[in-house]
Length: 172
Image 1 (cartoon, rainbow, N blue to C red):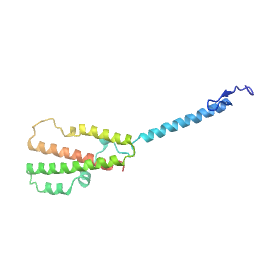
Image 2: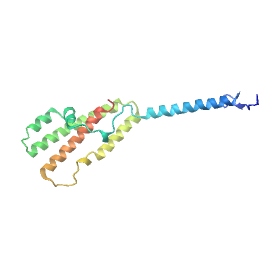
Image 3: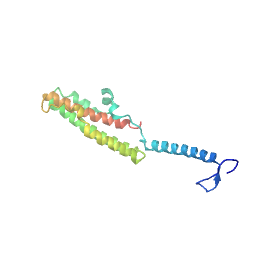
Image 4: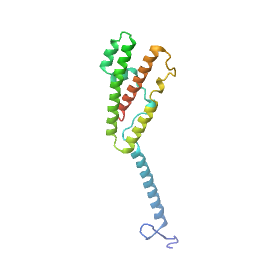
């Protein structure tokens, strides 16, 4: 005891120190711990931020201008309202957009800085793959005729294009 204040042994170096030093060191350590947690939290976030996919609602014009090919526009202009021609155009564009989606997905994976961010994107992609056609499922198997078939294919193409555009915007 010195000057009426008990002395304590510092765990750091075994030296005697005043209690105010211990309290000050605890505060400093608390700040350091808080900063470390904040840093770890920020480091674990995706390196490239992206809007939540569910909230990503591009316009039809944006999808047409940024995702669909010129071949699709040309093909659609030559269908003369014939169902087989329309579905052929949609199917051909579906293949093109699917390739573009995969290219964009791989590019985003390469750009991500850390494994945690890549795994977040992979998990997002897995979830999307499971539910991607839900909005297009009318629940009426075989009902609705040719118009329903065209609507279903168009819906699936648009969902694929939407995901492609979302991947293009990932981190930009």
